Length: 287
Image 1 (cartoon, one colour):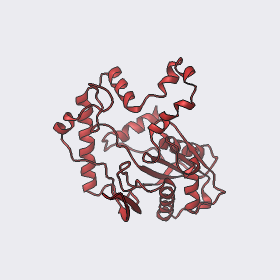
Image 2 (image 1 turned 135 degrees about the vertical axis):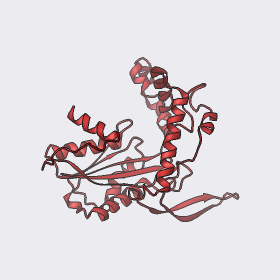
Image 3 (image 1 turned 45 degrees about the vertical axis):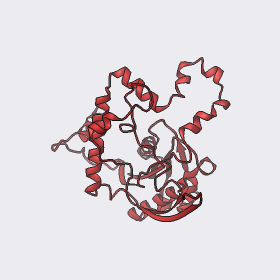
Image 4 (image 1 turned 90 degrees about the vertical axis):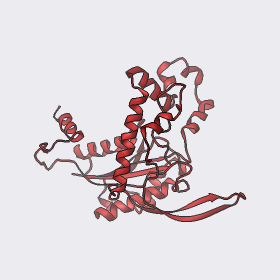
């Protein structure tokens, strides 16, 4: 309960909140950085493989903190849609960043909080005395590997058995339909969703204008492919520094958008999460 009370204090404005006494056993987040968040299939990171972004962010966190790679006890990486080179872009990215093979790495999948689970596992290993320093991260590529690819695998699934088990069958539901079921169960209205989305976008726009994301975002120079009207492909180099999914919008605009997953549903393109190309974040954790 003490831990829950501390977390609750972090989630609301509380000028009188205080941290518990420091201890040699404390697990501390030393640094947390990420790439920009860009749109799938259209954003400036759409042509950049996950291995490259993984390596870029590992190098950036090393430069920011002075981390010695040999001090790392473990790397844990969350990835729900596990695509990329040999289905292990994170291990390859580790090597491209110069981290030696003697540092172990594991990729985990927890729907839908794989990156958070990675942080929890590294923190738990430090707390248990298994390691002293760890690196946790998360990565998603929804341009080169999508949920549609997953659903296309039904030919290789034991569908006759799955169809007879309600919980197993529900594993194949899309997150869009899941949102509709949750809304029905708990009485969440379309207006409530639109209001939450509006406030979220408003805060993000304000934060971006004030440069509040600057310290956490690692800019990266990438090559972008553009298809011309004559069918030819041209490439150009761009520096990606900002999230590209933030929108200045209004409640009126959001209310006019049609449901995306179900007739008369509550989830739309305006109040649902952005479809990302690739999102890569690393957190250095120490005791």
